[in-house]
Length: 215
Length: 211
Length: 124
Image (cartoon, rainbow over all chains, first blue to last red; front, side, top):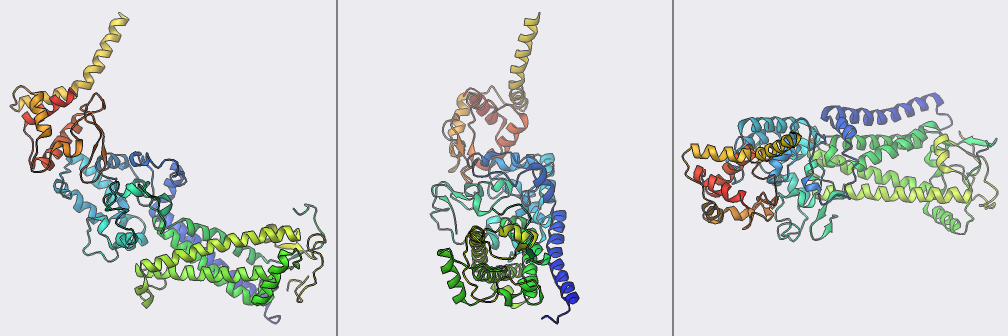
């Protein structure tokens, strides 16, 4: 090794290290530009919020104009939280593609068996909000992950996505279906306390009646 | 712990690439660790960076400067055990480069990171992305692989904790600030007189110069 | 003089709160409804429509917090005495009466039915 040219060795080393760093730095910068999550996290400080202290009121928290990767942002955020969040958790628009949201918005008179009709002007604003923040408008990789194995191009139920099932397949019945405080997987925020804000990591999970969940 | 007074007899042990590698790895590992599906692209690129950094380190472990090379610090398990035994009696010898326990940790960390990155690449291959997309690995992707990926990520974090603990213990024992050494690259040429009292070097590594 | 102005302002504030509801009831009258009856409203509240009723979500007492029968989401009490925000906004009242009648009764409610329920609810 002593015969190995000093010069060549450093060129190779610097090139290898710079490639690794460049890959990471440009990749992350590109993701920030594409999804626009960076501006939201910086200005709204939504990401660094301590989520442990406010478990119980997060259900009704106004999502304001915060932009998170899945919950999205923009002018329709508050309206979406108010209108759609009145009956169920305001499902983060980034969990379904825009084709799904269009199908849902055009069938509000039979919204999973309930009537959820809206005045046309409100519906239009909400549809714009959903389209802007749909999964196909955000993280390309996450969109692919969400739609993996989906039949058709407009799945209507988040809980029906193979991705969703894979993520929840270990959860025993007593935790969700047989737990009166949860009852259904569609009640994201029963366990994912920050669901309306698009946060689903395990740290934010607290199952009613049995506390934190770890797999 | 070490006196701020500039010691005349310090020597460069960690070359700039080793140091940049070390701290970039810390940064990208934690970026990846803290992001999951909610920032998947960020997570994946941080993972690519980690994999690239590990690849660089393997290469640099062969062609790098003296103390960066595996031949400089990799020992058998026997040497690691002996070193750890002496550590408990406070008689561990001082090494200018990595001590045997530190060397074992480097190998463990690199292996654990490789497995984390590989299982991660399998997972995104299942989504049709990444270097393994379209290969037979894509078919392996699933919930069990996701758990394997998480296991190795957590195992790496556990190793990081042990590594930091080892650095703290070693720093106190030999009265040298190893964290600063990984920033400045410089270390005291000889063992400090106090803590480790002249346990003879088991091998010829003591007081070696950089290449 | 100043006192008068203050009293007038207070009165205006009060009528503004009740304004939307009164206008809505007048609108229903314009659609052919007769005098509204709180009693009929209460009866409608409790009436069973093939397994569903207002009480399925809102509970028997409009003063209690309800619970969406499908999603389990809490529903704030309907009674203005407990929840003064109720029955104050035209758009909200119209939207929910439309949706909930269709969901529960399987049809739109008549002007009479809506007026009766609102008349009963405002007293709660």
